[in-house]
Image 1 (cartoon, rainbow, N blue to C red):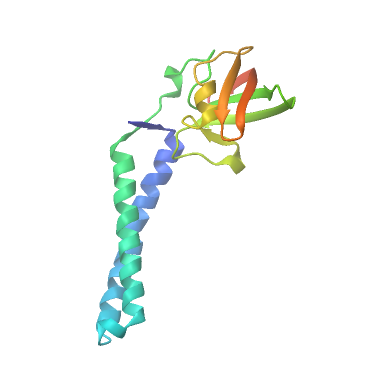
Image 2 (cartoon, rainbow, N blue to C red):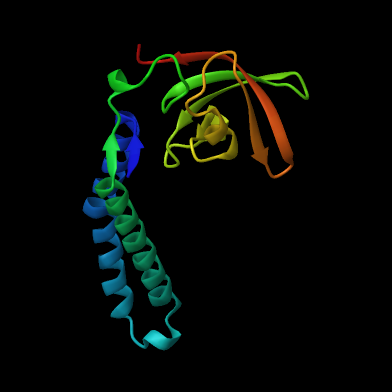
Length: 157
């Protein structure tokens, strides 16, 4: 079971609808058109259309499974005093004295450029359930980081 923000769930639903209603019919028509052009063994357009069809079907199935196994998070049910999904956590890396701020999200919403880390990432997993003032250790590929939680905020409050 994956938990998603309402915004991300709606994005996935919109992408799925677009793929089913717009992209797949185009791919299907293109495949029929290239198939009618003759010998398929030497038809590069046909092979490309088949690849695009397979890629589109694969993405549709993936998104359908994500939606089937996902639930929208009720922000009001989340604890406000601990790091949890959708919380923005400001912490200090004690070895470099660098201060960072990330939002903890599901793996389907992760986007480092937007400051969103997965709760399943080493840092996200180490921070989950912790309170302001606590120091945690996160085992990352480059070693172990000691992080002190400075602040926890929520955008939906």
